[in-house]
View 1 (cartoon, rainbow, N blue to C red):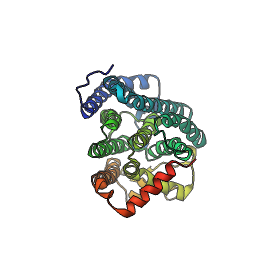
View 2 (cartoon, rainbow, N blue to C red):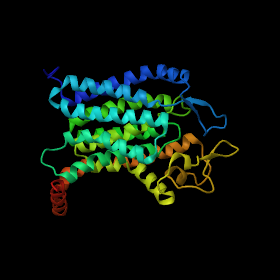
View 3 (cartoon, helix red, strand yellow):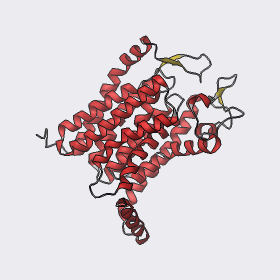
View 4 (cartoon, one colour):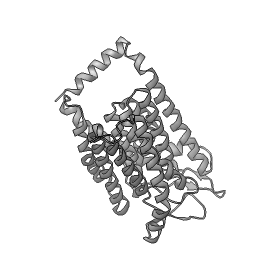
Amino acid sequence: MMILPQLPLYAIAIICGLLSFVVTRLAMPKIIKKLEDADIVGKDIHKSWKPVVAEMGGFGILFGFTLGMFSGIYMHDIIAFPLVIVLVVILLVGIIGIVDDLLALSSKEKFFLLFLAGLPLIWAAPSNVGLLYLITIPIALSIGSNLTNMLAGLNGIESGLGVISMASLTIACIILGKYDVTIISMSMLGALIAFLYYNRYPAEIFPGDTGTLIIGAAVVCIAFIGRVKLIALIVLMPNIIDAALKFYSAGVMNRSQQKPTQLNDEGKLVRPEVGFKSLIRLILRKPIAEKDAVKVIWAIGLVFGIIGILVALIMPGMIENQTLMNFLQIKEMLYHVG
């Protein structure tokens, strides 16, 4: 039975976003207290006084997102199946994040487990696609989740970039008339905005892998469900640039091999004389305060978010371009390989 059939999809998406925001906002103080009582904490090494901060706060994002998605499923059962698939995938990724936060999985273990978590997305793929397209879905989910997990470590950087990417995807999907996937993006957006209040400088809680992994997973789910893969790729460009710099300079690293960004005597961030390259260290050509470094990263994310929105605006007109049409025909052929 369809509940509240008179509500349009965009209205349902707004309700889902508001619900996820309120739930996360109300739950976070209790979650912070519980994590501190359980000694699930870590030192904030980017401050001279090294405050102890609750970790694994992504559980609050996951909690708000889950209830937001449940409300969407309850209010519009025609699109319930893909929404349930996405919810299952995000919950699986969240569980992997919890395990990683507690046990510190290796890069290979994490990649494989995330690949398995992405397999349910295959059931939401179009029925006429080939094996090659299907196998790229869980691979993309594993890669996307790791990308948002790598550009991290400063107060508010992960959740802030998540807010920007989800807001950009929401606007782009509205422009393209893909209102069904805005239920996913709005549910995650509401939870991230609420979480950012506690994660911004000076942070009261860190998202941990529980939070960072599900942001990338949500972007990939939206990309495949809404068929907005190009726009998703654009909004993830800060993470892609960061990963490319790290791979180019140091290859695949485990956390034990990574050296943190350092502080000078004035309490400003400075990059180590030796070590891997990253987007953050690219910014640290001169000492800069942590909150200012985060704002620069957010600004970069905002630029790519705006580019993604502009691409959505010009997409309908691009269909008339013959060169693009030839490319799309080739891409369509690849969908059916295998």
